[in-house]
Length: 109
Image 1: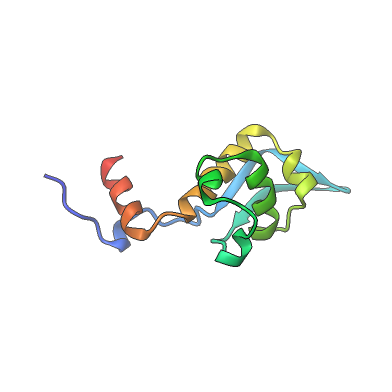
Image 2: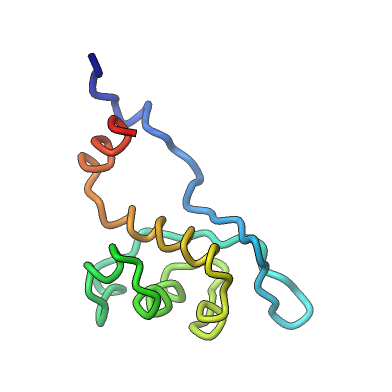
């Protein structure tokens, strides 16, 4: 029988950080990891939430510059390796879930 985990036992992580398989070149430096933060509703303006959940590339390219650190530009986001874009997209999609839905996902997994 499975029991409900408390928030303390759910995976925590600085899992808002994505290590890039293909670093982004900016001048003479390279960006090898990107930290994302949960967007506010205003930062999602002009994007359909369902498109983010479906990891629509155009929607991700609009949102990534708004919530990434270091700040990634839209052209840099558009030029990302598809595997890196998918990793970032899954993080963004997880931001849209309520805590109770995340707990249910962890219980099933």
